[in-house]
Length: 351
Image (cartoon, rainbow, N blue to C red; front, top):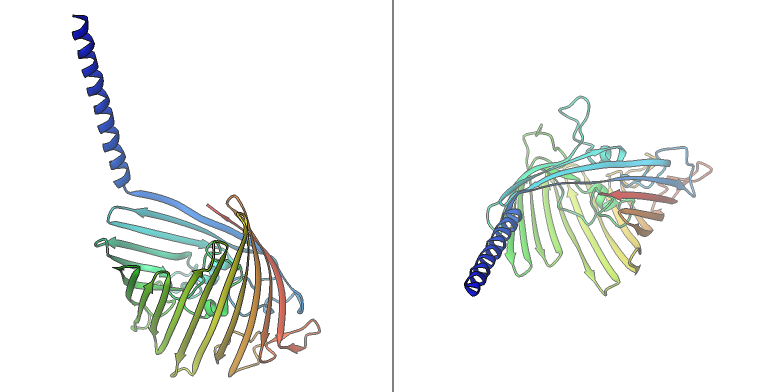
């Protein structure tokens, strides 16, 4: 009788264990398939000073975007809410501060108080190979992005600053297999992100292979072709590359350039990198800070940046030298000059 009791107890125990195991597995599966809501973002600030020009004039800075304010300056607060379902989801990306204002410079059309929307879109994973995105999304062109967290250099390149920032429209992304991808899009004219006041539309396309992307954009008479990519040359050494050409014959405006991004990781917490960029323009106004020049101008810019990570905090000391083909800057005596040297120190916290 004792043996039978022990046997029954053993069966009950095994049955209970199997029940718990199956229930746990089902619960984990449900948890994995349950839609996920995430909250992330960043906060950044910096100090910038000219070495060869006065520091009491806001206009005396490299002619690229964002890190151009003198003294102790604010970047932006970036708050991103995202919902990821099994098939559908959304992203709401809000920005506050000078960097955010520069990023959405063409957006305050509808609201009299301005706009804080950097990205606002919904998406549908139609299949494992096709995703449709509808709304306002950051551009697919270029090596650099708006968020300082994702850029190695804190100041931005001329190529990034004078390509598009954001688009509003419908795009379709395709996973072609074997590391190939493609994208096509129909959008409002470049950087008109709240609505379409012109009745014109832009078209875009992208072809990608193993982290290398060839991008195309046509908007309001202007055509841009852009290559963006990078290579891990070793475990410590990475080389990024961006090249682009833009032409708008109707407006007599064009620009072109190439930028190299060698970066060397010296330890788990520190990387040093250089951005070397050559940029040329016709009647764009990107390089000239005196507002006296027009026509063809080119610039060669070197930016040396260190990146130290302390938990979720990134510290970036940076020195930059811009050398133009014309006297596009001023020196400490307020005389026109062809070069500008500046330094900055940035602190970026991501969450």
